[in-house]
Amino acid sequence: MSFASLPVPPYYVVAFSSVRTEGDHGYAAMADAMVELASRQPGYLGVESARGADGFGITNSYWADEASLIAWKEVAKHLLAQKLGKERWYQHYELRVAKVERAYSGPGGR
Image 1: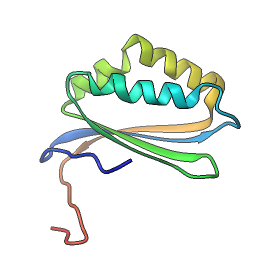
Image 2 (image 1 turned 180 degrees about the vertical axis):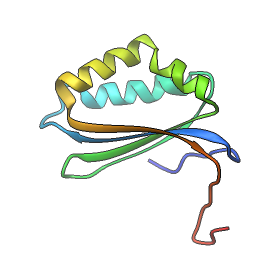
Image 3 (image 1 turned 60 degrees about the horizontal axis):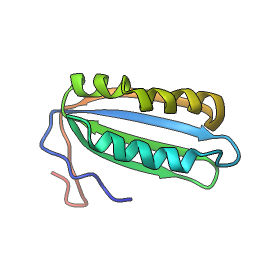
């Protein structure tokens, strides 16, 4: 995956860190479906995701405003994915939501 192409802030990020359970159990297909579904939601800006061999992963999704990310949380298929995540796919997860006020890229920085 590559870096998301994002607008000048402000915008929102949903940072989802997780440790996976053993085995796929439909995870990869659902993850792909969720990226596709999210990309069609109003206010969606992009996603960045990485997972290590140890099962630890981070997915950041970016949203134009708080209303957009709240609406995404309530999409029926996303609710199903959340339920299955709790039941099958994650040993533990942390979810954080933040408003991005500034953003830089490098190595040139500001």
